[in-house]
Image (cartoon, rainbow, N blue to C red):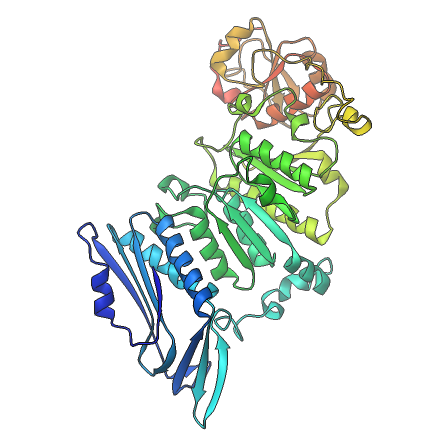
Amino acid sequence: MFELTDQPIDSAALRARLERPEAGACVVFEGWVRNHHGGRPVTQLDYEAFDELARIEGDAITAEAEEAHPGCTVLCVHRTGSLAIGELAVWIGVASPHRHGAFLACRQVIEEIKRRLPVWKKEHHPGNIAEWVNCTTESTAGRLSPGNYYERQASLPEVGASGQAALAAASVLVVGIGGLGCPAALYLATSGVGRLTLVDAGRVEVSNLHRQILFTADDVGAAKVSVAAARLRMHNPLVQVEARDADVTPGNVLALVAGRTAVLDCTDNFATRFLLHDACRQAGVPLVQAAVYRFEGELNLFEPGAQGCLHCLWSGRKPAQLETAPNCSGGPVFAPAVGVLGIMQAAEALKLILRLTDPIDFKQTRLINLLDASSYGIERPADPACPVCGLAQQTETPGDAAPPPRSESSDDFPLILQPQDIAALGPVQMIALLEAGEALDAATAPAGAIAVPMVDLIRIRELAGKGPAILACRRGLRSAALARLLRIEGVGRVYALAGGLGAIRIGVISA
């Protein structure tokens, strides 16, 4: 609840209004009129508000805090009129079953009131000098400016004043505020992206904290987007950060991506990935997508209208069939891996805005391995039969286009196979993919496995073409990417082993 009043604020009476049997804590913030500001003495303050708009915005702010922190009851009162030194100008009280939620909700209301409430104050100084100050912007005036905040970045020849202006004019959507989204959003905000929209319906959990760097232990239970937005504004008050506590759905996805300079997909499920991919393609917005599993990550940059789309990577598979593929949703993950991939997503978005993107970046899948500090770029060829970006789509009208042929590799088994599912394939050929200088450990390798250097694509394609064949690298991510590419090229029953060579025991597989 929010109220404006021209009468002195009675703190005790307001606190009594919050009392309730289920409340175990009450956190109160009081903002007093002080006798100085900005290094100048102050003798009196006059507050003036756009009453109707202030009440609407104040009610929205308190309602958002209650929604973000279930169980909290919020009351905020703001003075108008003339106030003497020492008088209460703002009173915020939050009652909650637990102190933790009350602290978080109170902090959220403080920050949002300062940022959004249409209130002006007139400062009176000695000598009958008075001047109006906009409360929503005065907190950063004189303390931060684009000139001093972005000085080191704008001094780069590739950025300069024009590049920094392009960043300030950009609008970027970040979907998923987890291990990828936290570092990505942080660097987008501190780099000066003018409008940043965060979308996530999740709440902060204890298991998030080791890798989701915008959150602390005190944030557990709070809405991720609310906490993240507040932190980003603290890092850079010069940018506009919007928080959408919601899931991406077919009903809202086009509205979310339309008009964006770029979209970052930082989610951990294929349904949302395909939804964002298709919406960005329809809206003509570049998409930066990443995924992480254990120590490894995968980065893709999709250009609207170009061939080699997400459907090409997973030809013939629906999102529900792909959820067994390695990702960081509930699985083991190395914290720096998501940090590095999230920062790389931010870098790609910034390069797009600054027009520094190499055309080849739109045609590759970049694979990053934090365990051995390696990085590979694998070509991402287009599938001519792709129902979304295939050649038929470029030359035929929708009414004339023939239905896409059934993929040669379509069968009852997913691209990523769990070790326990391999026996159902019958006799298979296991292909162990080795990195430079790596040798197959005979003591732990599956029986009958053939070791092939990862760079020897001709030999791998030859062996896989005899199918069914299973590719297995050290941990499973590179083999998944290569299996996808082989299928696109028309190789039949080729699969990738989930978890890599370490996921199976001696004798499980035979040639």
